[in-house]
Image (cartoon, rainbow, N blue to C red):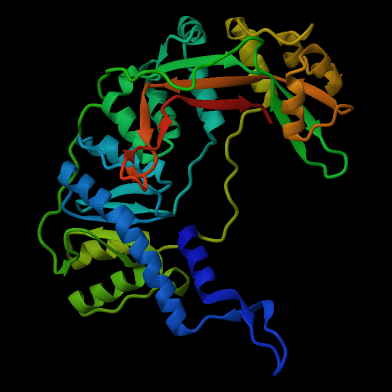
Length: 415
């Protein structure tokens, strides 16, 4: 929804060079409204980009999964490869989490909307899952020998956070059992800029650590048993075809033609792009439209669960095996982070000159007083890589791929 609103803002108002008084050069920077024709042209280009990027892949997913009807609110024309194997209910759930949408089945229609709330940050999700493990499981994960299924009932929430994009979701769905899980101690220093009040944090890696960026792909089994998706009960009067992109306004207008009824629409959301497929009867359309045509209400956001520093310290004191293997620069010990030791940034450089570049990158001056705090590094690695762009071709006609390592790292620190 945000993308659509931003698009409309850009389409209706532009910063252009405008003609000044007679004999004066044009002025640059004056904000003027675009003409209706310019707005329409911009809208058409935007829809065309979404049509090109999303329709082939979502249509392919529908064909693989046997989905007869789908209404999917599109956020952006980002690339992801369509998966080749059916994943059923688990696939829809991870497709939603990886595209920042919310999925539900309405009378057999797969509906993805943008109105909803995820209750906790990834750091709270991961720490909650780690806390649920037995001491022997935590020791196994500390040794880098953990698996996703060790998290039991917490696994679903963890997997949703690890699936950062649909390509990663496909990897986890297809062979998630091959994913190794490791948790390491990763302390930070915290610095508050006295001029701006902004807090900056910087991790301190263990001396001699050299993690691989990429590991070979490993064979594995699907994380979840296959559960089939619901099917529409019949064929409705609203025929959306085999898969296309249209705006919420066009969706509204097509329904009016099909059902002979008029429906309200929030004008701010009229240009929200949707991928649509299949046939809907009037009762089903009205339920779906209520979801994809709604805006997030202007109310206070619920407080999201966060990780507290004392909560993280308590876990580490209870499981000292998580501290093992971390070697600090100079005389700095893991316990210094648990105890909130303060030191001068220049002391870090004296102990390890390689930290000078990191301090500069984070904008922490040498004379700054910094406070140590505990942190954990969660590593999820199914091995291999995933495509982040469509296949590319050089001017010489040679094809190549742009890929990203499947090795995912998440840092958890307390607030």
